[in-house]
Image (cartoon, rainbow, N blue to C red; front, side, top):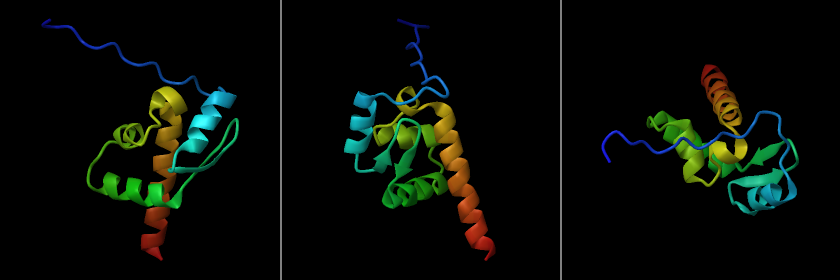
Length: 96
């Protein structure tokens, strides 16, 4: 139908800990080295891939969603902060 849009998926509430099934799923992904209730340790290969995709102009949320961890699961803010941290690291390395 014309004018119909798909309902927007709900983002994960900020500060909500990951439950056991979510942690199991996250830990099963190759892009994640470890996961606790509140933290995710990203695989260095994924970080390098994400940095290249960002340089090529891809949207952060599309990169994460394509890897199986969209904002519905990990939250939009977590994606924003990861990307900001990785970009800052690149800038710091370029200055040295």
